[in-house]
Length: 177
Image 1 (spheres, rainbow, N blue to C red):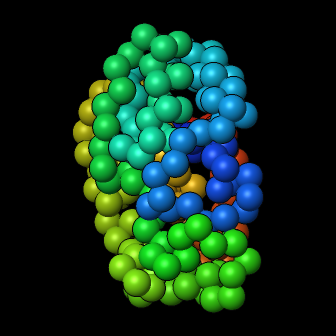
Image 2: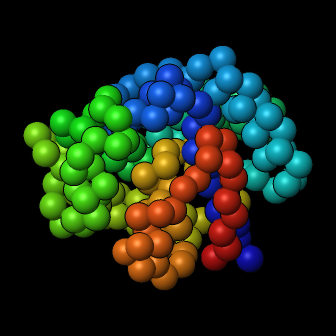
């Protein structure tokens, strides 16, 4: 049975400040770098990861590079793992009026040029379908919104469960094909 490991990038300033961070391309904090290094050691302890694919965004690339150094594997980049573009909610507090409701409107794009949940599903699911046809156990280094969608591929989710799914910085989830 093939495994798919999924991790979220390390801590950023926006994460620490509880601000919406989707398309905003920011680096890891010092804490985030330490989290990435610790997660890389955990990933190595599994002993069977053969491939690393990461979002092109800086915070995911920095996290993936930590894994790459430990596993001695190159990092492949796939734009389908980019975080959800939250439009005009970018940089605002996660408690901003209307933000939770906008996330639940799956077929509606985020205001001012953002993406809909369906767009993220299309990107993530197409990558997973491709990975099902490979022979390598892979770790995906991505983002919270994308990780939520990936989890929905493997588990049926009510809207409530989807909206309350949370993946911590550098947490690793394991799925099997």
